[in-house]
Length: 109
Image 1: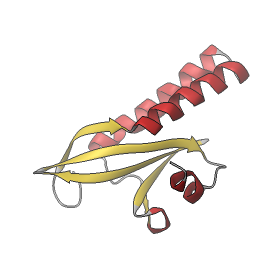
Image 2 (image 1 turned 135 degrees about the vertical axis):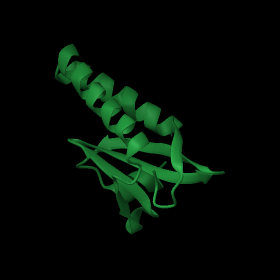
Image 3 (image 1 turned 180 degrees about the vertical axis):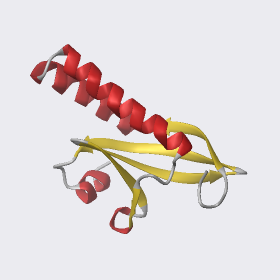
């Protein structure tokens, strides 16, 4: 439940978040192999699934336009919550490496 008392009924991955996952998969397969890639993608998926029950788990960042960030080292899941009637929609906006400059990442798409 969110602070407003509404439930997260749906999680959507924005187009850019899907592209980020594709990039992560490509990079990890090349650099770390199939098993490490599968493990990392499963960890990211598990973290996103956790947000269904704990949508405010991520830290709200004012400097990112009140978006929330959740660590899944070395990556950061960037998302926002949007009321949708009595429920809340959780939109995963980006999944990026923690070394990247988040304001720049978000301003570039």
